[in-house]
Length: 199
Image (tube, rainbow, N blue to C red; front, side, top):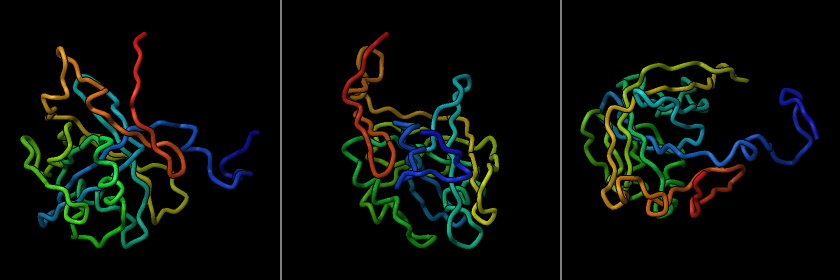
């Protein structure tokens, strides 16, 4: 099968995200100019450089005034965000924070999570997360979008602080088995990192 995305595909569901998978999940916490916390998951996410450490995530537009999701709006206002890594244990809370709630209301509250102060940036982290990356925005890049009123935006940030729970370390390395991260696949599917191998 071959198809051109601009002409559509012959399948009942779009296969693109299922082909580019698994994708790590950035559970991004931000704060707006008024001090209201926001928390949302993004699976168009990855590390993009190591020295200095840098990350990137991409956000689609929102069906509301301005076309921006709260995460992107907050980062524009404050210049900072925290990436909390999603473990198997936190999968249901992560899914709860994907729900669309009114601007200014906190997903921390709706998901029963506790914010914790960051060391180097203003936004809080998720206390329950064993790994948190504190980030300062370096740039935002507008991407192609089918609807200019709902822009796609890539956000890049420098990691200026890293928190790792001690129990996730073994012999000086992060233990993937103990960390037990989940990742996004296509459709409504996820995967769990339960096996690793070394080459």
